[in-house]
Image (cartoon, rainbow, N blue to C red):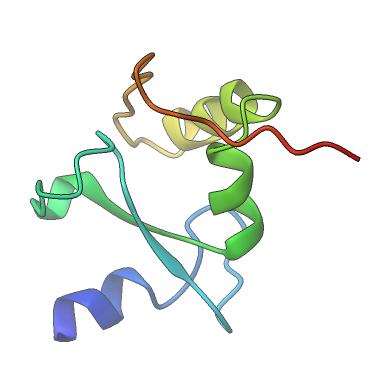
Length: 81
């Protein structure tokens, strides 16, 4: 539990620390290797799973030094307005 709290202490992209989701970089929720886990605020987490913003979020994570997966089989959220 301490590892979870540390990883989700703040968003790695914006440092928001009130609500932070745990994201699996390789999108395999069974892979709990520490190198595969990252904390994201709800906005960045949702953007990562929305195909309209996915490329931008992956680039930001790569700039921060995280290895990411662009899994084409992953289902993305398409929000309509």
